[in-house]
Length: 209
Image (cartoon, rainbow, N blue to C red; front, side):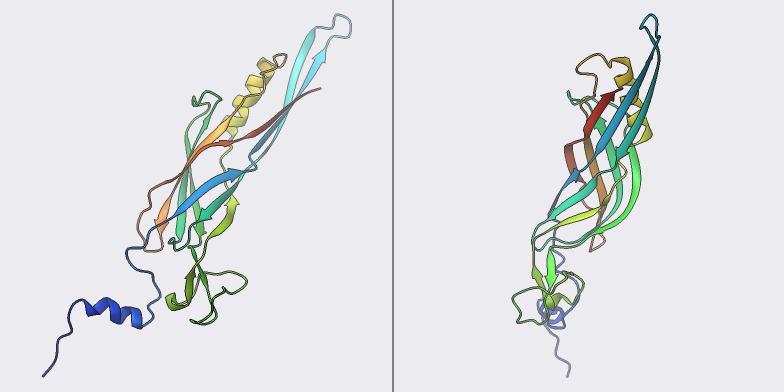
């Protein structure tokens, strides 16, 4: 005669088998920031040798995309980022250039680290979260994920126009920052609540030659 196991025993059996995924109750615990966003504008002014009047302006720009830095809480699920939404705002928080969206394909590792054995108390080096769940230990980490494309041609073009229009004004260099939403899904293939970054700074340098 076959004996039926109680329904509550099933999760215990799955855990004993060393299944490779965390509990379905696992959550994402992450905060993010952007570091290293930079726009440098150099304005060259041409003047009439006789009158000293301005006869021409030309501007060159260099920009650097920032690094996405994520702080992962212990026991957080990992995340695969699939998209980014960016709004550039001025010092007053008003939208400076268009909102744009860009696809991503970047994984942020979970808040776990792998041990060599179940009894070990320290993680393996280099760190990885790719192992059987029985060998994972909760572990906080800070991860530099990638350079992300958040400064587009519209933003640099508007900054160049504003600088060239007001280059004699001490406030000619725009004071800009980034509002960002990161989209994706967690290790259990569930859509995440967007990870929000508010007013990440853009370092701006304005030079006049």
